[in-house]
Image 1 (cartoon, rainbow, N blue to C red):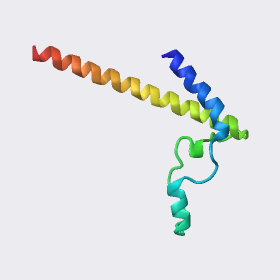
Image 2: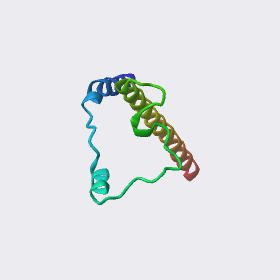
Image 3: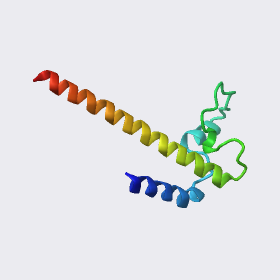
Image 4: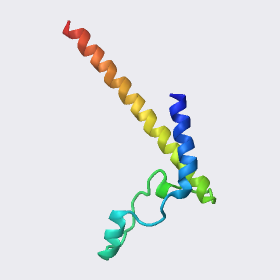
Length: 95
């Protein structure tokens, strides 16, 4: 598990500078159709893959990427434990 996390962090550190600053497909279509972005009622936890207060764009994106990876891994671990315990409980009650 530690090797996987380290590999992901290394991947982020190397490839974040190569990320495109151009809008993605959905944003590009919205721009070409003249749709404009309204005022958001919530900007999210890490808006635009950045952390407020960190002026260095690379460092801000790297840290938000690390936070995102860790959150996804933790949620996946939690769900796997919950589903595994439910499966074990269902198997033991069926016997």
